[in-house]
Length: 214
Image 1 (tube, helix red, strand yellow):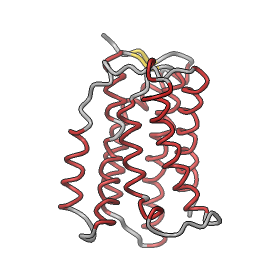
Image 2 (cartoon, rainbow, N blue to C red):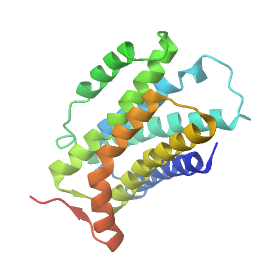
Image 3 (spheres, rainbow, N blue to C red):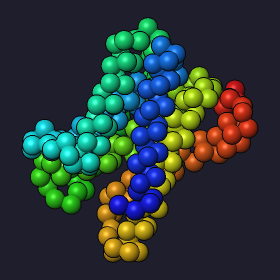
Image 4 (cartoon, rainbow, N blue to C red):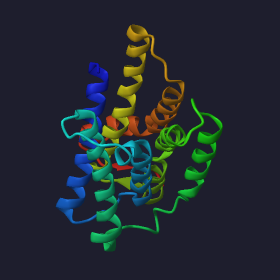
């Protein structure tokens, strides 16, 4: 653990809390991509599948965090697809999720550190997480705007990945640790947020809503 990973994890938790608070307080999931949240749920379940195969001690902080990620992502999907289904904008959330899942699964089978089920599922989750935000960004591009609270969620989510890049640099420098798959996927994911970061800094920080040109 180092300061970059700590703040990265805190940013990730903040993103989850912001999104859940937005949906619960407004009683609406308008502007939120259900497909992105479903992809994140798949990511966490496949990445932390060991929780279902081995005994989990609740005194282990890392395992508690894994349970939080899985539970929060599944609960978010429940809110979107069931409890507040009437507010879900499925017409604009139209990006084909299978176009992200299938390539990620295929790539995980081809490029991994060890060819066994658990390792392939972990690698699949890393590849899928790198592109899971695309349906949300596609939804914003179709509607032409993003609510301020949704923008805060996306900024926190993107910051989590950017901070993890600094974490990997730190670990390489001080621990000689390199995880090529995670690094490449993390860089790709961060690049996807770059345009949004620019809009966030130039618009949302100044109190304006993100509105894309027609």
